[in-house]
Length: 257
Length: 258
Ligand SMILES: Nc1ncnc2c1ncn2[C@@H]1O[C@H](COP(=O)(O)OP(=O)(O)OP(=O)(O)O)[C@@H](O)[C@H]1O
Ligand SMILES: [Mg+2]
Image 1 (cartoon, each protein chain N blue to C red):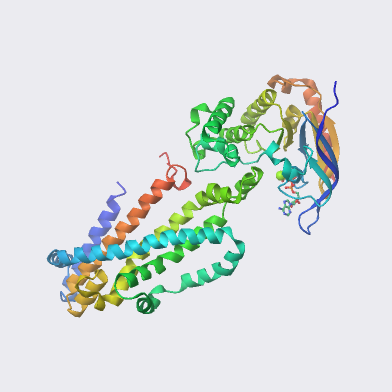
Image 2: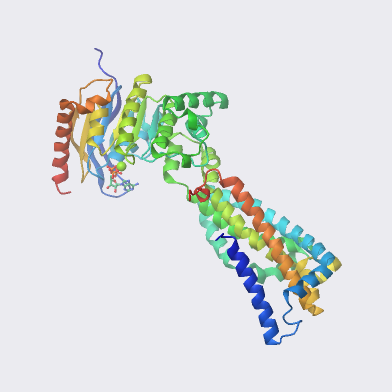
């Protein structure tokens, strides 16, 4: 087996916002092509900040960050970000929203229409292409957001609690869909969640973070392999993994910040 | 009970009250004409009223359109440049608080009598609410959406045209709605101030002036009624525009299932 290619590298990274307190303290991280890395930890421990550094939405303070062999901002054209709320433009239809990322890249209209149609079909939204966001359910909005990100065929996908606002059944569905989509158009994922079960179901690596200042507490490998089906959630080894990660989370949550 | 019955009922009650006051107070017709006397006056003076309303509508519309387009462009500039905004926006807010009506004689003096003066007054009075609202809208863009555009490597122009302007539309339209109520008032007041020099074909403001000097009080009331109708047309037109732009996507047009 060939050695996996590292595509995200954090080397002794420290982050503070302006002159504020240290938010991330001395972080080292390597994400390889094909990884699905999930960050989990108490609120305020800097999970979103990690993704903001990778995307170049916010600068790091000391250390070095490289993404796809470049500085984060220069790698933006090969990554996509899925935010906690679906960030759809309310005045655009589902179809036009799905086209937006391509439109910003000035792809010709006919081409991007076709591309967005294809992605909407993949997430099962071909019947609501002319709906406006306010006519969609929370889960449907998130699907549009995923479709929009995937039109770019990103090598790296950043997801910040994308399913946090959804009920458990919808969330499980979307987890399975996300893995199915990844099987079709492979992307490396950096994912943030508060749900241990979600983390275990999706990832091959789970990074447990601690707060005050934000740092990496432990890393757990999840070697169930892919593809994964919903029945995985009923297996004892799945439950064992969930327990292991939960225990690590309790450790960091009991420590007073 | 149907909801539309309520304003009809309150309106009828108001007219009955009006007659009651007139009958029991012993006030004379030239102090408080009855609604019927006002309608009669309106009918008698219909040609003059219609002509005047047409003239006023012209001035109000020109001033309003000028304010709408210049207000839009000004806000774009203010929204795009932080230093420009910092240096101008506070003054715009101060100017908005200045009652333009107080400045009317000066404006008429500078812009000249007749239509130019009237349009200038109308423009000034409708301009500031539009700029204040629209600029506020351009600055209130959802930060998550801004981050989305940053992630997509959007150019400054794309961010303004595809994100900031559309998300400011509800604010712009709210500004237009205020402007629509102000524009006819501005035009009428402008005419009132320049009425003397505007000749025989003045607008409603000139009619107010001339009926007042002739003590034609019912006709004065009829002029008020006409102004009211003109204002209503302006507001209704903007409400229609508001509907056309927003009803498909904006939450304010969310249909409720009863
Ligand atoms: N724009 C900002 N300016 C200043 N401080 C910030 C900013 N964004 C985040 N922080 C601070 O950085 C720390 C980490 O924030 P971050 O959003 O990364 O946490 P998180 O782990 O994603 O939390 P949550 O689980 O609640 O989303 C917090 O203490 C927060 O107050
Ligand atoms: Mg967060």
